[in-house]
Image 1 (cartoon, rainbow, N blue to C red):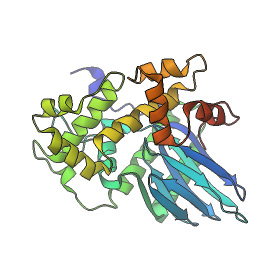
Image 2: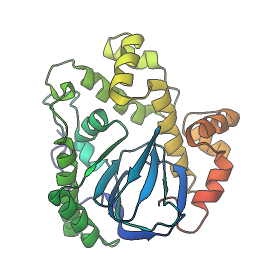
Image 3: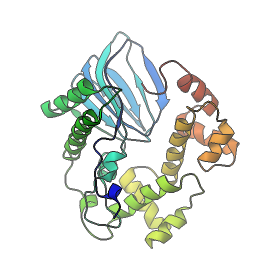
Image 4: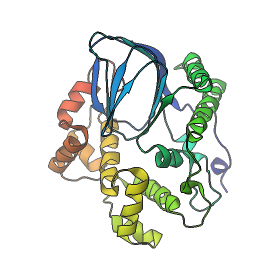
Length: 293
């Protein structure tokens, strides 16, 4: 076994932003998505988030964790002001933590969160969650040292586990050799590794030795979105990341996410985000402050 497979690299900087933020009355950040996990802890005032197909009104003490590749927006009502802790971090490191003993296709921590939370998790923050979130914000430094990264990763890991503990033991954590959760885990990994090429659902189901109908059924049940739509959302998120490179045209970006037709790309982008890719690029990625709230 290779060295990289036998160690959990705590020195990796997983976090891309952590701050105590304030947004004024009427502030709005339109629909967007990203590959990071996003955390809010509302400290004062109110805000409204559209997450997936749900509208979520938040008040002081609310803790919200939005999972990767979920379309969402953020706004502050008129005559309100909202302050909150806000964290963005990559799920990649934590996807290396297996929660089932299957050596070939274990269910990892991030997949388990997807199964439990679907699009997002919301609760009134416990004292423990408040302390964990505040500690991450207070420790964060863009010029992270190796030990500081390790400290923050340990805190984030504790936070993710606390969220998992909010849910009952579910069948995706069972250790059967061929549980539905493991089929979904394989599918998520397959999409991540092959999104730059044409993906056929039949290719995935054939590798799993199950029917496409059964795969589609269990994927929709666990993920609360169809497999085809998830593939589209994943690709569009990758397109958003590529948009940060100003040297790439929209045609270039379409090719890099497995779509050779730029018109198809534009239609798909609009169906997921709700605006054309050219407008999104101008409005979010070329404006001051970048693409993150």
